[in-house]
Length: 204
Image 1 (cartoon, helix red, strand yellow):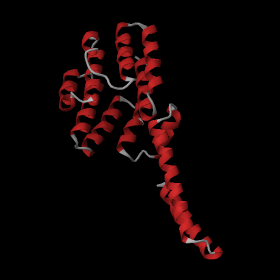
Image 2 (image 1 turned 45 degrees about the vertical axis):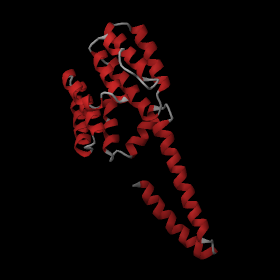
Image 3 (image 1 turned 135 degrees about the vertical axis):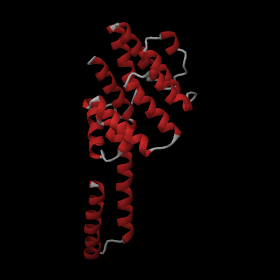
Image 4 (image 1 turned 90 degrees about the vertical axis):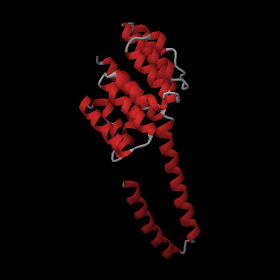
């Protein structure tokens, strides 16, 4: 909304300047395009590249009207009930099998209902996110051999699973080692999510 208002104000000012100083219309169009590209680059940088949870959270707060971002904002301090409510809104808004499976499984994992989580993720079990979720379910149950039997395609996935297994074993040294490795490889919104995931584990 703030960006839209800014564009409107800029357009009004630009129109006045064009009339007063005879600035060509093409200059105005090119300027708008450049501003738009800069904004797109900034959004991409925030969501997919940086490793600064506070900066990412600031962007999420300014766009919290989006259902997915609203859920992400519950990760730092939201109660389990608030997180589940946010997930329910996502499930109601996005009917695609990928979203239903992913967030349905997340909802079940939050409730420690691992059988329900396995059932929810079933439709995408052979996809990268499905394999990761199944590994995470096994890790939460302390099943090391089963957790390590899945194909994990992202660099942050394997150390995250190992960190959960180490936590379940009470091995704090291995937990910290794999925690740092997972965070090192994750970027953008994924880094933010993993960062707060580990903070929540540390509170237990």
